[in-house]
Amino acid sequence: MLTILAAIFVFGVLVTVHELGHFITAKMTGMKVEEFAIGFGPNIYQQKDGDTLYSLRVIPLGGYNKIAGMDPEDPWDPDGFKAKSIPARMLVILAGSLMNFILPVILFSGIFMIDGIEKPVDKPILGIVVENKAAYNAGLEVGDKILTINGAPMHTWDDVVITLRENGTKEVTLTAERDGAVHTYKMFPEYNEELGRPLIGISPKFTKERLGVVDSIKLGFTSTQKVIGLMVEGLQRIITGKASAEVSGPIGVAQMAGEVAAEGLLPLLNFVAFLSINLGVINLLPLPALDGGHFILLLYEGLRGKPLGAKAMHNIQTIGIAIILAITIFSTFKDITR
Image (cartoon, rainbow, N blue to C red; front, side, top):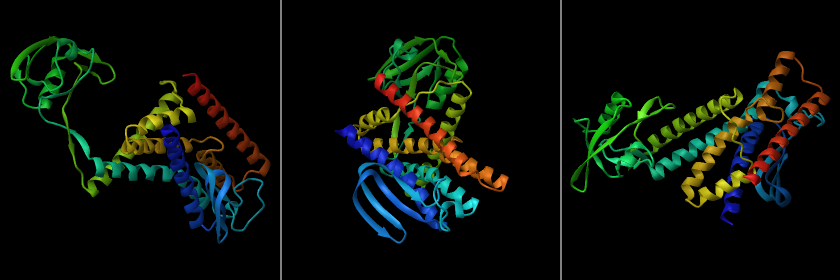
């Protein structure tokens, strides 16, 4: 039951926020929005305000906008999508992903305000000892205080990092205090190709630090920016063949949502923030039926001086939907067979 509720919450928030971006900018630019719906399927509640029908539907997994003239086969409407300027239409198209980037800023900022951040203690005290690594195999434990490395005294965690880096992969002789007793340990660091330095498998002790509103918002912005950068870099690595694509479909995401929800509300909100960024980045890809594909078509229209014909637009949309459907089926199959 928790997995079902968590999945409804995650998908509902992500899609509704995305569609809300399209809705707000469509209204701002004077476009007629015929319907703004939360959920899918049969109506539970409907109310019309002006030209827009607001509806709540029975399946709470997202929502949608029906903007007049957005479908290639829609009749001409002076207040429709096609009647507006190219910059206005571009704004409406990009606004969904923009909202997917604004949401994590809000969520991350709230999490930092409520939960604070973990900062390393600047003392040579072990907070993590990784299993089956050099320090663990030598007998070091969480809570041990490093006193010396190769005879040099360690006063801060930076001393530990710098000394180990300078030592390279040569044998390390380390003394540490535990429960008032001093012990000596010998080990050989292992060179980590990804980080480009030798490691023995230890991390410092961390402490929680409370943040004010301004600092939380600043960190919310920088965290969102950092995650966007990492996701774009990951996509580039997949496209260039430097990394394999790990695809999760709706079932996989729902399972992860249930697992994260079991840890509490803040981890679930953090999960939503990461997924929102993922959705925003993916939607900007220049593929038919995605927002990025619509943007490219509008750019082409601006350069060409006139839009593509209804038939060409219909064919492009059909191809895009087929691609997305194929990816969804493939990822769902992988979820089931994992």
